[in-house]
Image 1 (cartoon, rainbow, N blue to C red):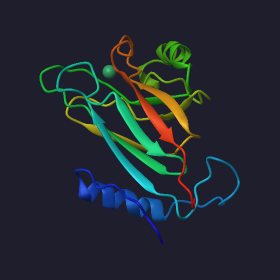
Image 2: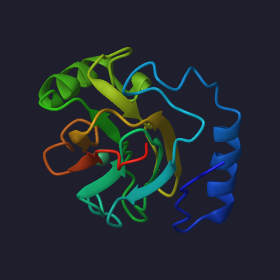
Image 3: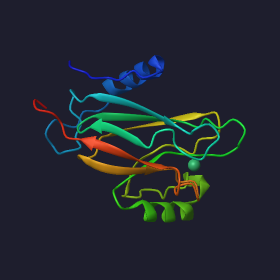
Length: 169
Ligand SMILES: [Cu+2]
C-alpha cells in the first residue's frame, strides 16, 4: 500500500495517527472529491503559537487534495494564560464563523455546533497543551484558518492551500 506520510517532529504521534488511519472506515474510492481512498496520503501538519504571542507560527500550510490531514496545534504560551484553537473554515465565511462561535461560547470552543462552514476544529487548548484534528482534505483551493477565541482572529489566522492531485491519482 502506497503511503506518503510526513514525520515532522513527533514520530510517536505520527505512528499513532497512522494506526488510527488504518482503522479509518473506508467509505469508497470514487464517491466524491472528499472521499478517502485506502491509498490516501496521510499528511501531518503542525502549527503553534509563537510562544506567548497571539499569532500562529505559520501563516501558510498546504496539503494535497485527497489526503487525510492531521493538524496538531501547540499552545506554546508559557507566561500568558490564554486559550487558543485552530479552526479551518470555508472561504469567505470567517466573519460568520467567528460571530456564531462567540455566541456559542467557551463551552463549545467558540465554534457553533454543526456550523456547515467549519471544516475542521481543534478543542480550545490551554497553554502548554496540544490538540489535533484529522479530516479529509477539502477540494483544491485556499481555506482560511483562525483561532476562534474572541478577538484573536484579527491576528491569529492563516491560509491552508489544498493543491490538486498529481497524475496517477
Ligand atoms: Cu487564540
